[in-house]
Image (cartoon, rainbow, N blue to C red; front, side, top):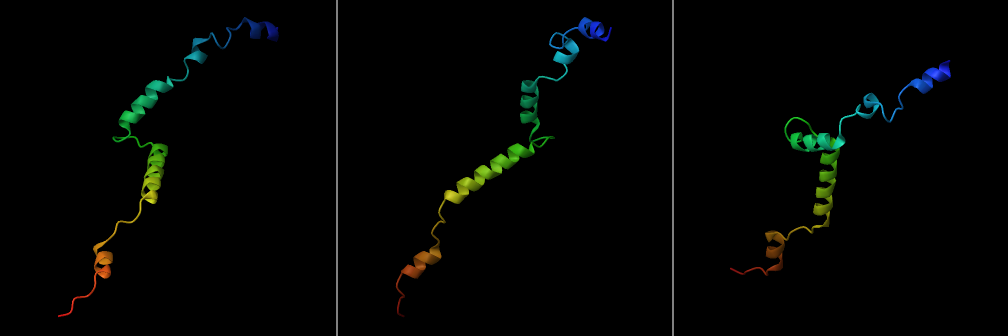
Length: 78
């Protein structure tokens, strides 16, 4: 009789309770992107942006300062 009860149930892929259990991911991901700077912080996205900034700054060379330019000039005799 247990087999009969199991087979009488609606299949899981047709059961609206199972199919509609989780909200749509597209709507929530869009909502979280909008709310990211307000109330919700997406830590993973912050981490990825931070890593991207480090890569950009790591590739840049240090700008020449005035001290280096002054050191290259010969001294004036007064």
